[in-house]
Length: 256
Image (tube, rainbow, N blue to C red; front, side, top):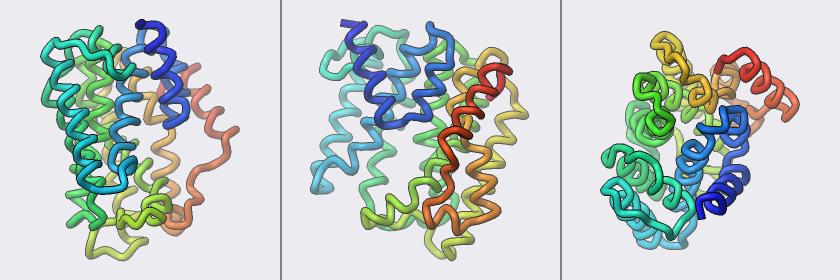
């Protein structure tokens, strides 16, 4: 059962989040199951606000995940999703962090913009930052939680900017209210870069395989701050060859 669940979550992550999948495959073998379980969970939570035609149905879907994660955190095994199967067999993760990871996705149902930049950054902390903090805990690196959270916020900011055209196409307004689009992009990029600087200053021995999930964040954020229009036009991604080469270099040098 565990082997089948691991195969399934690997497929979910590979399809939904290729960058995190590549980073996970570069991690030591023992760290891959908890990372894949968390990243598959995150992929399902991120999809939940979009997978239903009505907001109420999306709310119900997110609540289902909150209830399932509460069971897992309380030691009640769940076998109705492969990520839950794997999480049920791991040392318990903090219930409050798991619930926040799911509950924060309710905000993605709302088509209105965030009230300001701070509100958006809180959302990124509750989702992307919290995810990497959980990854540090799940892989036995509790001393790296603060570093992972800061790196995750940087990664979340980069992914948010990459997704701007997709959000707009779905009728969402992903930039903070009261800011011109280019100004908002530059501000988000600046906050993300500051968070990455904070993460590198904190340090985290032995946690590079977890932090490597943020391997693309710095070049994306730097490009967005220099050229905000590229984020609005959806041209921040870079070539596949360059992306994989950057990850390989980091894996070979032990960096992130």
